[in-house]
Length: 169
Image (cartoon, rainbow, N blue to C red; front, side, top):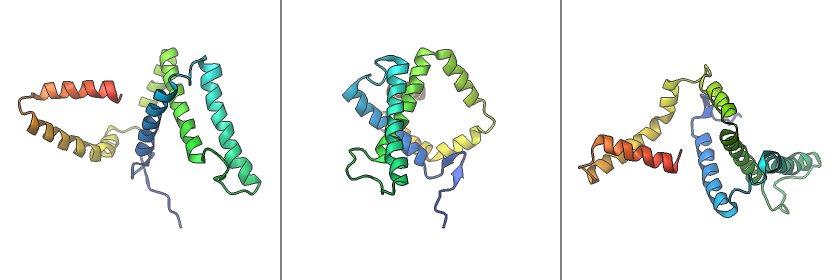
């Protein structure tokens, strides 16, 4: 029996992708407080690539070697699960892209342009994917308007834009 979720625009309808990326963001916020910028402290070749490579090696050892050897995983003696290692690898990949954005902006801009220019992207489908979130935003805006009736629409939008830029984007 096939238990895979239907795919829409490359993302699962049940927002698994969004949930995982939000957890990446949450985990990275915690790790940034704990470890600072150690992920890139010694540059791209040593720190960024090294951390990514180390996580890949760990994942390879945890999954491939154990499966080939006939052991079940997760290994009860392991300090880190496969999910934790995959999560760390995903975060390092995202951090690496932020490193490229900061240190090689032209390369990043070219990559971003290719992504945004892909023919598969549809603003209509993207808007449909965001519809459930938009309902929550509308409820939030209605509550703000109820509590602060003197705030104009442009002031509210400007404030929300500032909050998003400082805290989310």
